[in-house]
Structures are given as structure tokens and as C-alpha cells.
Amino acid sequence: ADVARRWVKWMKMDGRGIGLTTKRALTLIDGGKEPFEAGRVANQENPNRSAGNGSVMRCLPVALRYHDEIDRLIRVSTQQAAITHSAERCTWAAAAVNLAARELLHGNIYFIDEVLHRIGDRAPGALREAIHRVPRERESDLPIAIEGEAGYVIHCVEIAFWFVTHDRTLEEALVYLAQAGGDTDTNAAVAGALLGARYGEAELPPRWVDQITGAQGIAQLAERLVTGGAT
Image (cartoon, rainbow, N blue to C red):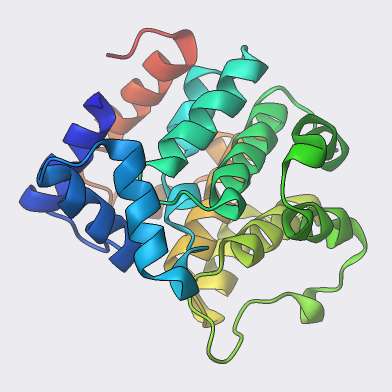
């Protein structure tokens, strides 16, 4: 409930880039709806957009906080997703992204097998199949800019995993994704998060960091999350 209240506050004070599903769920919570119920209602009202990628765009702080508690990482990842995106493709996509981040933070660049092992048969088949094909997939086959599609969470995970697996630098990957079309912001956000987990802060171009308001505070917050001291 606390995180839901914080998100509602953010929506009212700023809310830049908020998606339709997230906005609807948070509006329901602001009106008194219980958070998980709000997520279910928001998705039921618009089933054609029930597999949006808002849950994976914001999930990485959970990986930082629970990188040394895998079961809890999975549980909290799916719970934070369900507040706005209750579809299983969304909840398990968040778990998959955070498991990948956890493995990369611990130095395992061959993370895909571990992610598939951890999510197992509990995750939807579409997600498992997308992750499974990443190592052998060609860049030209990636589902980046599909006509009529806007922000499908399975494709976002597939794209992010591909760029981490196929040895692209952080700058190269993000510039490409920002220019490639499709859901550029989320594709770049999730890929960038995982590439950051793989390569670390040193891989960030200094000219980019210089443009980020509060960069030092963000770095300090990340360190507190990793050590379990954030509030």
C-alpha cells in the first residue's frame, strides 16, 4: 500500500510519461480502491492493452534491494507489477527482468538459463519462449517496431535480453534503440538497466551523466538499496 500511495503522489505531482494502464490503476487507488484490485480492474477494463510494459520499466529497484534473496526478489517483483499490471505476462516479465539484473550484478553474463530455471513453468509460455530464442535470434528479427503494436511487455523483455546477451555496449545499444522506432523509451530503459547491471557505472558516458539532474543522489540511493539500507 505504501508504494501505491507514493506512485499516486508522483502521478499528481509530475506523472511524466505515465501510461494509460498505470494512470487508470493509480486513479482507482486514489479513489479508494485496494491496490491489487485496482490493477485487476484496470486490466479488465482494457484487455487489449493488458500486457503493457509499465511493470518492467520501473522494476529494477527491487532487484537492487533483494539481489541476495531470490525468492523474495521474485515475489516482490510480481507484487509491484500487479498494482497496475495484473496480467501474468506483466508480473512474470518483471520477475524475469529482475532475475536477469540479479545475475548480471553477480557477474553471470550467461544469465538466460538461470532466469528460465527460476521462472520455470509458472511463467506464461509466451515469455519463456521469447527468452529462450534470444541467444540464437538475429538482430533483424527482433520485434522492435511492429505496426499496430504499442509497448508489448514480452517483446520489451526479448529486446532487452538480446542487447545484453549479444555484447553491445551500453551507449551503442541505447542510441540504436532510441532511433529504432517502436516503444523507444521503455525498450531503452529496460535494456539500459540490464546493460548497467552488466557493465557498471563506468560504462555510462560522462556527457550523459552530466545532463542528469540529481545524478549523485540517484547513485547514493542505488548503493543504499544494494546494501539494504534504503527507506
